Length: 494
Image (cartoon, rainbow, N blue to C red; front, side, top):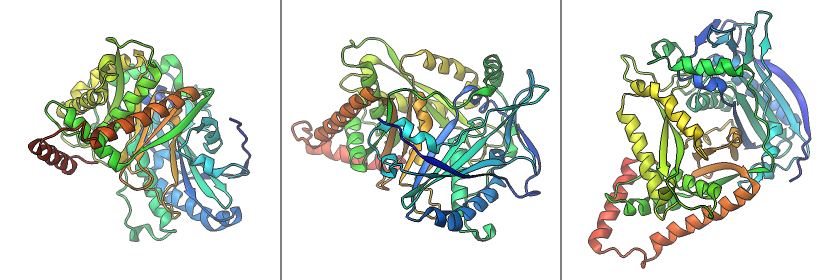
């Protein structure tokens, strides 16, 4: 695919909280933050329909967008600050200096780029999105060897008469997907209000930064991550090299398809245990992905495939003072789901994956997560060393399409960083139908294979749920299945 982009940089500016509104602050990294020191940056794009000219955008929309960002950064000030890395052995930390630090904000105009191509679900070359992602500057290194690097940069690109893209690149060390979504929704609410007095608005609750000191490292967990960070000199980690011949695509599972798959998996289960929307959609996607990557020529054997999921620890840690849901930072526990190849690729592979994911989530939620934290690294190492390690980015419950900046909800959202390999992006469906959108980046021929396997899988379970020859249930069995399915829908958050 040809990569023909024409981008005109209109302006670069620095956005910060108004002087005096936020005191100079340093925030220590917790053991939840430390793993991200050596991992790739977070990269996201939000596309919105916008029918006006560039001149109209610059005059009538941009000033409000920038002013609302400045106000938002009063509460989310780490995003206007820096990640500071002193020489070893002093640990890195986040710092915001009032009157000095700011967020780099770029405004660009795209000329000749097909906006419809950018927002399509169909496979497209990953390179077509890269011009709309801002680049995080390299660290500044002082004579004393102190590295200082911005936490976040933002680029807004106007496609005259077609749309707007808000692009974001940030270091994951500052906060997880919950914190980032919180920031975006706060900024969105202020922008949509068009500079009305924040005191008169119904805004999301502001973030809480002050409880980092109660997150105690349960067993020198951060020390291991810091040692790896120092040994790799990862203060220089930046955007990843672009893989060749890779495309990205989005697949939507409708509510009806999800309900059919839920019913089929529940019916196949020995104890007919209901399954959640997230679990069954993830299981179906994981099975199809591994089938794609493994290929049909390999024999089924005892090899084990591993999937990494994350559980939000906010309000789930057994502390005297719980971590609030509005805590700003990273607060996710990794869980490794392991399934044998012969089970994952078998006739009931989605059931095997669903059971394993459900069990892992229940096991994590029922345990003392802090006490298990020292063993997380061992599980992650097992995951890294396995073939085709798969992870999750986003979640339907985050409401990533609930981002109305006064232009309506996004017509497309992309988590660009999934192209580093092995990640599946999840969000609620953008059509508002209570379905799920699944994003993947794969080498072109692998994507073609995945598309075929995905479509075959959809047809297979739809037929299984609609073909009376496949479902020979008597009245008592049918009544029991209907009762269980209804109970599942009422009890499990979609």
